[in-house]
Image (cartoon, rainbow, N blue to C red; front, side, top):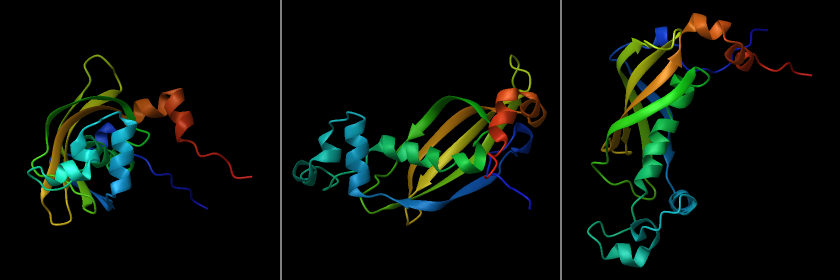
Amino acid sequence: MKDIEQRGLYYEEFELEVRYLHRPGRTVTEADNVLFTTLTMNTQALHLDAAWSARQPFGERLVNSMFTLATIVGASVTQLTQGTIVANLGFSEVSFPHPLYHGDTLYSETVVRAKRLSASRPGQGIVTLEHTGRNQDGTVVATAVRQVMVWCREAAASAPEVAEAGEPEPLL
């Protein structure tokens, strides 16, 4: 029997200007928003206080934008970086052009914008990813540019910690 383990892409497998659609989407609940907001110690009433938020310009509570960002990036992991990432290097150009509300379904997609081999870390490369989150109507609710360092295939095969992590545990 052949075993296939889900993994992300090695440096060589990333293609410029390719868009990856991450599915399924994620319908965001009130519980998601309140839990994330309180876990991160964000006391913003716009996320927690329905009565106060009803009197604000949007007329209701909004989903915490950091939840939205974390979810659009998280949705990309299994397809792009699971087991192949060395490090998340940073974010730039983060924006939230439209609010996300309780009950909205968030869909994530990623376009590969650039890639280069690392000058200081042989066997690794830096990939620039542009993440976009859309609601169920296709309206963009979040965008972010992220740089990640990933393994090159040959270097990953010879790195003991990566090779060991990629081997499935035997079933007893």
